[in-house]
Image 1 (cartoon, rainbow, N blue to C red):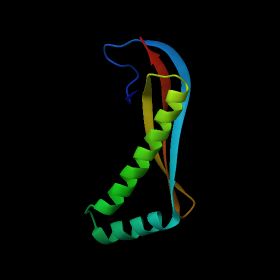
Image 2 (cartoon, rainbow, N blue to C red):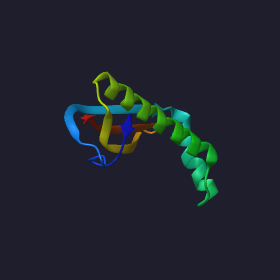
Image 3 (tube, rainbow, N blue to C red):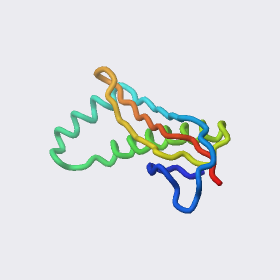
Image 4 (cartoon, rainbow, N blue to C red):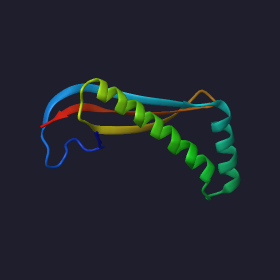
Length: 104
């Protein structure tokens, strides 16, 4: 399945729109609190541990999006948007959305 942030796929035509698809992942309480504490301590440095957790959450959300698109009979998802949101004081949500399409 093709997953893209663009509105079209070069060399392919969109023959049908199956609908909007979404994938979401929520990370637990300690992650966000610890992340901000460590980032403050690092002062401009990078934290590989937290980058890996964010990457894992994004990949899980994308997998959910792809699964939903397949269930709709789609060949691709176009216009994908990735959002990160803090929920309350202690949780982070990674949300991805796009349009499931059939290709010609």
